[in-house]
Image 1: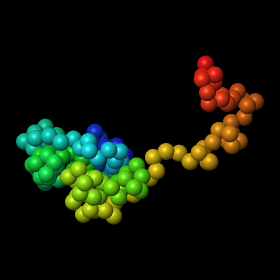
Image 2: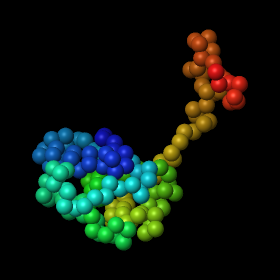
Image 3: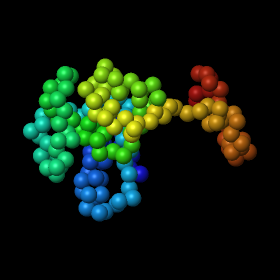
Image 4: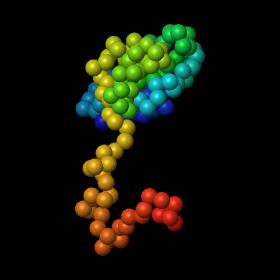
Length: 154
């Protein structure tokens, strides 16, 4: 599984599909795109798409005409279309980005393929990952806990 985070790596699912899977290579591989902040999309002038070395049959995936930015190239949109699954940083954010207001122009794309999205809580389960409860952190092996105060910082 290839994991792309936000627009900065959203070309990964596109390249994986266009240059490998479409040519019978890496057929068992999948891609997942994680979205932390959908407002950052990698927008640019569409006439610069050739600099990305995208095959002609994939260029339409990058085209977005929306009220926020007009007609432009959108790297995140292409990544969303090519990725096998999407992950948002919570169930609430997964719902929010599928709305017209929260989708920042990508709501139609997200809703067309909404079966791809899951929300995963951005954080850890303190009950499961508590150093106070972790039997593997043995003080005899040099592990020690510091108080959560200014005195605990050395």
